[in-house]
Length: 255
Image (cartoon, rainbow, N blue to C red; front, side):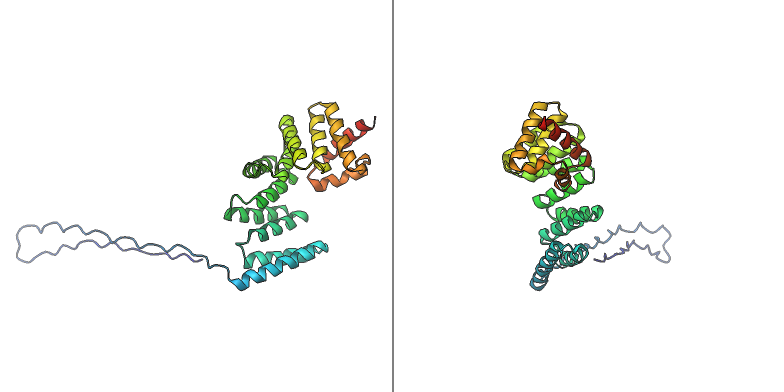
């Protein structure tokens, strides 16, 4: 949008001296300046039905490319989709998450923030942005973003699970435990929250509780006996240090 720059001229009174008058002319009557012209507010054209349909098709194409591992083609399609239809916030979330998956963190954050600029309470965007912050090590931002998402929906298991990881990394083990416990209540069959709970307890020196939580993860998925399998926790938001801590709990659980 191009802004119009308006210039306003203030018109002053003009004193006219009358010939043959011996006394000074009276002061000119004050003249009020004209009221400033209102600048029209920029308007955004609504997304047409054809653009919305084309954007939907491009989102599907982008997801298909992403499933096939063709991330650059996926990103290009998703960027075009968002350009055609920025009002459908799921498009920005999908784009942001895809950028996050390939490590283009700054771009991912900008795409997700664009969705939140349109709707600050959009929980999928808050969840995705919080994860991007967490993986990037921006713990304060990760915590603030996930806390907002959790406040909007107390059943938001993504937010409370990631809050557990963020608080554990920040050294607030009690809050980490609280969030991990809540995550296990919301997703009792998912081993990730149980491992998060195990490392939170271990950090708080609740060693028996840590072993019990990790044993539950093993009951849900026997592969947690294997140290090599723990590397996949990086995809679940665990940092390298948290994966190593998980291995310590795993080893203690074998004794």
